[in-house]
Amino acid sequence: MTLKTSAIGLNVLLLMLCAGFLIGHGLPKSLMLWSSAILWAVAPLVNLVFIWRNS
Image (cartoon, rainbow, N blue to C red; front, side):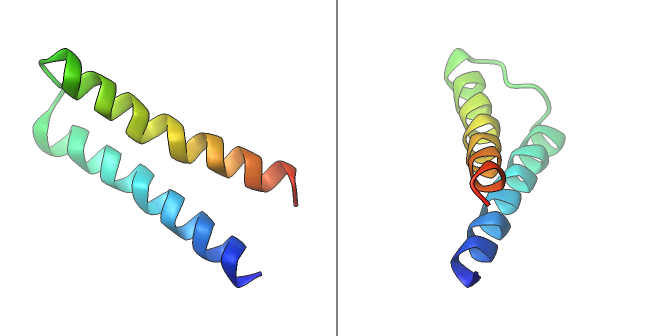
């Protein structure tokens, strides 16, 4: 149970970091920053969906 809780906590932290990046720097201007921001948001969401479906 602690592994699941820590995985959820770390994924939520990643989502908060992504939101903080977009709030602090505004919308990205280059393609590389857009791809990083998208991956930063999609990866934790996919992990959270996987965790909740297999509970």
